[in-house]
Image (cartoon, rainbow, N blue to C red):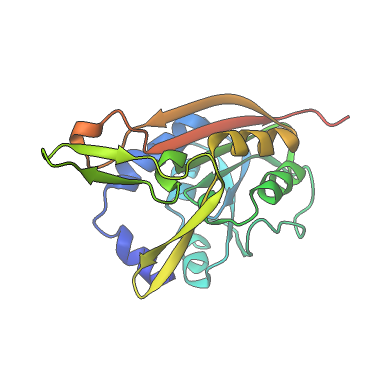
Amino acid sequence: MGEWWLTELEGDPAYEEVVTPMLLDILRPEPGALYLDLGSGEGRVMRAVQEQGGLVHGVEMNQVLASRSGTIGPTIIARLPHLSFLRPNVYDGAYCVLVLEHVPDHHGFFSAAARVVKSGGTLSLVINHSVWTAPGSTPITDSDGEVLWRAGAYLSEGFSDEPAGEATVRFHHRPISSLLNAAAGSGWSLERMVEIPYHELGDQAGIPRLLAIRWMRQSRT
């Protein structure tokens, strides 16, 4: 899977032109602050945060990708949301880019991140928008050639398996309300949310494609 991901990224401008800038905009890295990259992949986002002056540790489950990100910053091989090996209250912030939709337990994800981030610290997220991840969601073309969007089972949690080379990747769908409620239940206070319509359907530019959210860790009592 790691080799497939590296091949997919070659020549694809989406990360450099859209995804990474979206993360930097929502994260607003502070020089000298220590961040945890949850699902660091090959490390390209880690590098971008470091160029903004942040210090970054990575967590990545794939050994091929972890070996790449390990050349950029310290990287631990682990499967999210399991972060019990990390000390609590260490990081000034954490972020996750196009990974949460592959994590089966989003409640556990928010709780684990809250344990390792300091009070007043932040959690920043970039995901595929829930409108796109709903099972059955897809563009359709009517008899007049107009491209429309079928929303699918948006209001219910579910998943779909998408091809990835010779394997498949599971996308877990959660309505935005499920994400926000899970985060709030773990002590995260919403600060900012951004939606953008990055996709190939030019006449459907009003449909959100990516979602970015920033939370602050509430003070522990």
